Length: 578
Image (cartoon, rainbow, N blue to C red; front, top):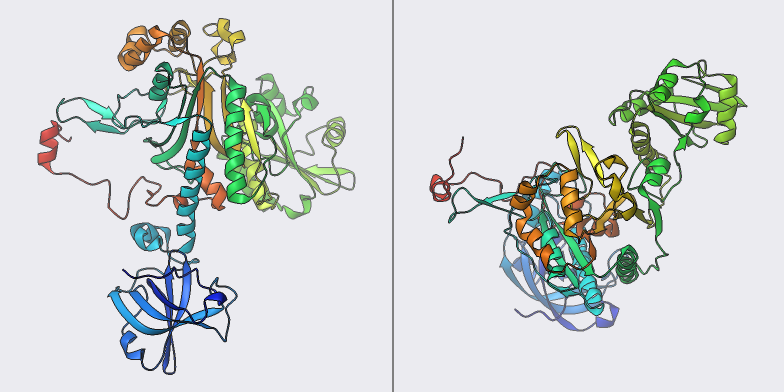
């Protein structure tokens, strides 16, 4: 179809040019014998004027009709500084109605009042809004930068299978029944983990893929059942090589997208992150660090604190500077309810005013303990101290969550900042109460630090891995590790997490067989593309950066998936529903 230019490209230098535009009607206004139509395409909006000679041709036109308009560009008398094309308008002399539209179930504008369920059901209409269009173009731009940068660094892009062997260890697999091998199933990949390691064994050395991944797990605001990751693997490397490679990619992306020169990324061990921030993905855009005050209460007479210390628990606190007067008892009760979500039994508080401490536990702690708190926490007038005493890591984790909440509530976060953090030295294992065994904290192919190999069976809780995460503004942006390349060590790790030799062979036999043929040292990362785009786009909802997302219950409201299938299809697959 004839189209001389895009709707968002016209400006004052185009006055007196004849143009042909195509687009959707964004808005229609009648002013006497004149009709004004805002014509929208993916680049923007141009105002089109229809005089009395043309008025009848657009008398039935309403929002979302598709028009082709030919006319002359004129300088606007009433300029609109909010539009890129606000200095001009097009006086129409020809118009073709390409297609009509029903009244839409939602307003198609940047600030829509439509419920999210309505937006998801009519996603093809929602996608016409500028902010979603911009997000998709941002996503495309990041993918192109990534492909070009990694290609320049000697990586090659390789596609790995979507129909895979089920190797459950971690999240649940999405299963696909086989028609030809009845009773057998494929699994959709949770990641290309095994295949990318096989590529290293195959001598590829530098691989990447913008890979689709699938996990049947409970959802949240920054997670979808199907997602995309920038998957990278390298041979003959150590952690430093991978970190520098990733930092180079991030610097390239942020320079080209945001015009920002990123500073070198901070690095902190996992244990220090938990101790200082109560989280392994801390938001470093604000302070409010945790303080371990257990030692102050080593000789306390306060029964609750004494019992916690005697059971090897911790007493931690955060200090909200100059906030004591802003929190009423009702407000503090709400904060207590919040920490209980994270298994804390209570939140104690103290307020410091005029060199005096008051609060929920002020009468049950000694004057010496109060004095030590004032000195250690460097308390100043109107400071609020929030305390959680608990066993295990509950004190850290609950206060870490409260730290994030206060960061938002008190407007402590600079939303223009991008703070990257490498979290290193993760525990190799974590104990699963449901399975009554230790499981791999990352995955069972993660290598361990050499100095901990002799503790694999005697003290697995004290074993640290060569795993690392990259955190950006409180989001886990990527997870990665140096992989095990030694068959004997791999067998030991399987044994440590309760996977027998036969079970390992059944699950991973094809992979373990490859270890017999010269496996190179290797490692890599999987970068969450949607999370990266979400942060770059300045949204906290991952559905804003996915063209056709699922709901929090993994449903597609537009296509009505998942759906029931015909009995004939089930019979072909040898499946009978209970």
